[in-house]
Length: 358
Image (cartoon, rainbow, N blue to C red; front, side, top):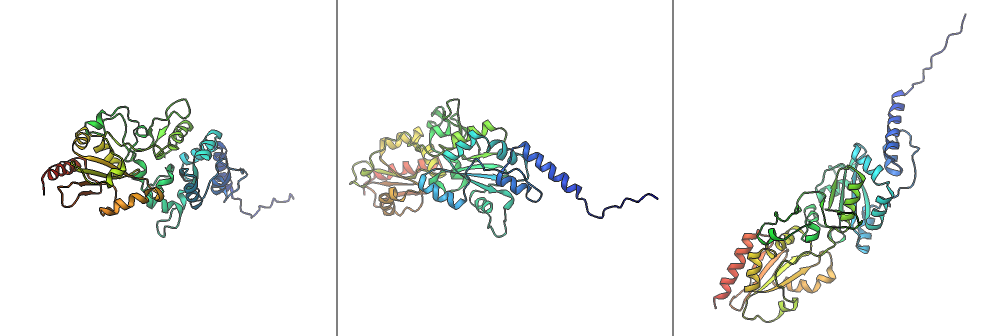
């Protein structure tokens, strides 16, 4: 009588082995390593370990370092659940050239999309989602050091012509900022910029980069993003007088004080729609003594003497326009943002009222 083979009653988790094998194959294909791969495979097994070429920081560390070094923060919103994130993390972030670009020019913070918690808002992803409003599972967001308190709309906006990729100013001077051979900020991600930082072509010029197609597009974005909001905002074609004129006695012409920030959508719009508009800058140069009062966002030491002038007129938000004249009992003030036509009407009204003697 042949002995019968006893069947083991021990459970064989074949499905678990299959899933683990697939995940390991994927991680090898995308060259995933260190913490992100650990998170992805920790419930099974993960032999793929090693130091990440990118020096990731926590958000608190990044904010402190950005304040002291003036480097921009690079938030990387990633998930363990889609191929673009895995490709960006593996093929992109583990490339030596990409890692060098990021480590030298940014303060990188990795944000786990899968940790989102809309109930108590404790996760980093949820906090950033509330501030910037993004909901992408694979996205990069560059935040300049002086703009860490601003919204996504402000980050996307710019009033530097090179950053915007403007080829000519004919559209601006005719009153149409959308006819200048560039894609104006306001939701568009990764538009062509004017940087030749790699000596081979233009870099990307935008605050954000969504999705992942290939490594070269990522490199182009990083080349441009490191300069985003580093260049001065345009002052248009207004013949601005020195700031000291703003505190001197009034002369025959009315005085126009333009209070603007060097960052932010509303101030950018005033610069592009009014200071570059031929109709308006011609009127300003002819009829006013124009003085630009330009605040540097986040630089309290620089702004301190300007705050005195700002408080004099009760200005609490930027931008603002003030018209003073010896023929006016009180200054005329336009608070906050306004469209180009409303601003033009304000300037014309100021000229007419200033011409009438008290």
